[in-house]
Length: 282
Image 1 (cartoon, rainbow, N blue to C red):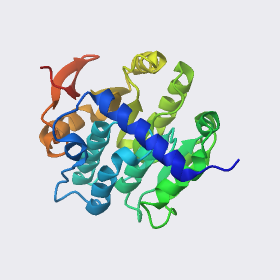
Image 2 (cartoon, one colour; image 1 turned 90 degrees about the vertical axis):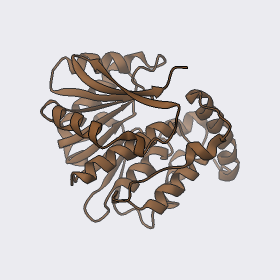
Image 3 (spheres, rainbow, N blue to C red; image 1 turned 180 degrees about the horizontal axis):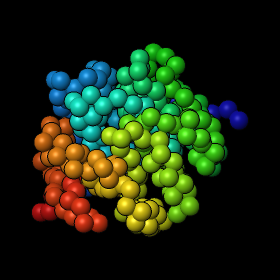
């Protein structure tokens, strides 16, 4: 089947813009210009021009990814790089690459690889050329894709060798209890000692099995939460909890999330102090 990519993009752009603005409930007088502006620490080792362009393009990129989630992940990349943490990046559940692009921008292409896993069935359901749009989006930000490995399969078929040595592992694949548990088990074995696991749709009432799966998995006691916000949960290895909690409280989030309506608070979860991000109460 042939598709008009420009028409697909225009249609999706409008839908994504409306959903993103209203889901964050952050309409204000400055509009999207304030939301898409980004502050990047001068010592952050990243291509700042490309990151700025990414956020300028944020609402024209197709997919579901909160801009505050994106800025939080950018801040976490800054923390890891300040501490000279190196490793690969991996994402389960790619769709059209909106978050994949950001992880690609995090990667030091000379030392790190980006792994992407998706079964590419969502495009069939929505009658769009999913893989074609993904490659188009990636090519618009990267001169070559040699540092990216794309696995066209179910995440249950992934091997440890395909995703090992990850410093960030993003889980946004199947949202059933079984799928989440499988992906979380793989992520735990794949991350380095100071690696982070980011789980999408945590506390999302439309995806209850994700939250159920996380709660039951954390009963093992090998991973601990350090942060939750914008329907993303960030986990680290239990042995690294104190180290990470000190870092996220020292290298402040306000340097990256420049919105007066957003705040992070210290709360408890499973007996651990964590940061919780969200919109301030009126």
